Length: 613
Image (cartoon, rainbow, N blue to C red; front, side, top):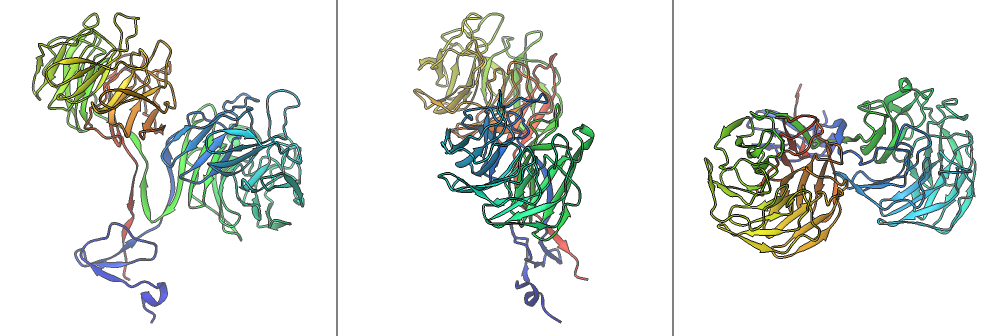
């Protein structure tokens, strides 16, 4: 009988505890548990951060950690093209450079920093274009190389200097190759088609054409599959079922084809099916979480990002597909126990498992509640009831300043873990709808109204006992949010009186402009994280939103959304982290007491016990 090492090529070792990671095929004997252990393969979809703007028929390129979605159709009305580009960093989406012309159903290939978009549908008459645009990771430009045939709904794959497009409307068999300097004609496909796999599926010398329709409109859905070797097309194993407007990822011999329509264009014909191709045959994979048509897709067969499109619901939803020995848990918000009193305009301090919600309305209150990660308890009240106040610190050493009581206030109070003490040294400038960051030893108060609707740029620093004037905000702003510490803080969003997406970093003496938020918003939940790793959620955009964003010290990108759109609630303090957020209270169409907790994504080895029989 052959040994495991002879068959697999790996030796089974004896260990007293499981290692923190492992690779496929590796096994060990855990002497503590008396079991044979090893990493097991997991396969499936998990929810990811949404697009800022959902869209179908977009151009897409890239990998599961560096993708790009551009153009497309953002709404159920047709035609309705967009110029928007969004970049995926493996965690969330951030705004990229806009296309020169709103376009959908184009051909695309390349990478996040070297992409090609060609042809497609544009507003106006005749409605189609043969323009080729290139993306350098920052902006799009016209290459000056007209596509050798004018079409839309074509497929593309390859690199920015060795790409190929094929098919398209009106039901073409045409193939064209791009070398970075211009287009040349390639040999034709056997089956004319349009609206086939909507994402790159290979290279210029090994491309796959699968799914699509062979007549205009909803047309005849075809199952024929062809592969291009750089010169000729050959027939491959047919799809198990006809699809069009699918999303895809991978290569010609390791392909993932996702969702799409069967026929015709009705919500009832939208599919969830996932098919995998190994170069020889198709097999069914784990179904996509929701019926959808082509949104955006990129990556590999075992690690893909697919944004399905199903108007009017779930237009921006994104899911990740993984086949791995790692157990991947995406970031997500989950319900926590509600506060004892629903309110808006409260200040926040602390961490997810040791938080404070301070003051608020309606009616105006000084009520303070503490959260232990499980439940809220009412503790000592502020000495001066107020709402829309600034607050920061921890659950045992907090600072509350400014606010509406009933007019703009200068009141400052400190919290010792059981009660509030009014400081004899108030703010120098009365303010409400202000914000801040820091600790009870060193904090910053910024902006607000005095009086409403007069916006102020005033900034003051707290040194532990009193406030002193500091460098003003670059722009007078209210209802912004802050996070970080006094020497490394952030101010983001707010109203000026327009909603703004601006971000300013504070280094202890001056402000520096940084990357804009994905979405302009005010009255959001803030305070979560540090200057290089922050999180905000909710707010007004101008309607209440549930969307979230993360900040890496330079740029913002989307994060999973809360379950309920709301604004004007309590966040956290400087000892919190972006992967353990808390949103409590706030306003929907009424004051609410609900709490949601955020847990960032995690990855761990999927270690299981194997039978020895």
